[in-house]
Length: 424
Ligand code: HAM
Image 1 (tube, protein in one colour):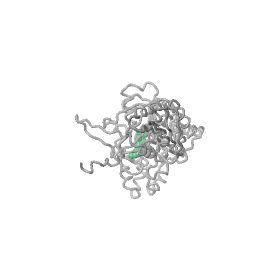
Image 2 (cartoon, protein in one colour):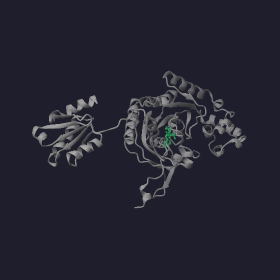
Image 3 (cartoon, helix red, strand yellow):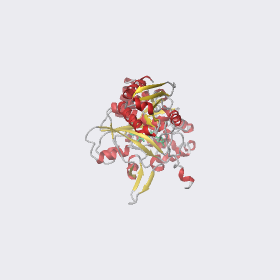
Image 4 (cartoon, protein in one colour):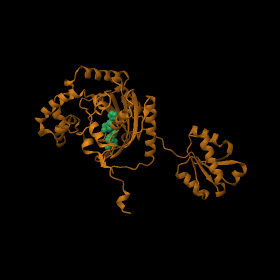
């Protein structure tokens, strides 16, 4: 077999435990938090028609113009591996006629973007994408933000993240601003970098997001989006800020935050961190009132955000939230004839101690070898059944941390382990 075939595609990762186990725990925690806010899960396909993303995310965005995995299927239909989940969720809601009532939903799984891989940036990555439909008003924007706040607190990493918020107003307000911004920047093209010059004709608002200090310096004297806002936009954002303050959610107003997807209006927000180098945005979203109508659905409001779980994992790795999983009981048969009793022992413990990890060594070897394996697995107790134990319906339990050994009646083994589990 050619060696290069045994090499994953660039930007695609294999994740092993303990990281994969932490991944599971993070998703479990996110499910619990979303359940507390009364959100329901939805399952969506990974593939959508290419045109959906072009219409929803926007032709001129980096995602659509440079980063999509697009191919023709056998029927010559152009399909794309989803780069994000909002477009698919909106498509599904319209298709199944679910927009007559308010919806609070989420979906999760892999997303695909052809980006330059680096720490925290992968070509296949994971999001939990949280969406709401039919709920107008700033209260909902703040609810979405408070879901993030709750998660980061539970993960013990609220101190490492900053909440940045902004309003980008309505399409018509942005349009007027866009013209003024382009007029201004065209007089300073010599001070812009190549990326910003390109964006001048494609997506000028994204220039505000530039990380280049020279470009930021040009922007210091540029027209400001805020001056184009009408009363409604101002009142909406003022109320968002007031509600955040009421809830004690600390934020930073970043007037240059615009987001890289076209569908947003009014409130946008990002949770960022300095701990991950360049890929500092761990969660992001905002309101997207016009999108459903634009895609042929009813004219109703919508808002949402996505947790970038690969980055949240990197951030929370060291906060002590994630727990390693080692066998509590490692069950050993002293010889082949005792294997049925040992497998039965495993079954009994799993039934009576449902939260304990039990490993039955099904391949019977010398006791010494099996104890070595139990150590390697970092098991806490080795449970042995041999001739003596079989004759007395007992189990020999060895605490692999202390070396202490005792004989426990088979009928009491689960009580014994439950008690131990509570104290270790
Ligand atoms: P986004 O800002 O493109 O928004 O992505 C959301 C999050 O996904 C980012 O903040 C980041 O944590 C993570 N992410 C994005 N690209 C990568 C990558 N290449 N590698 C690792 N993580 C990545 C959206 O996707 C919107 N659909 C969010 C939304 C939902 N807005 C409303 N509803």
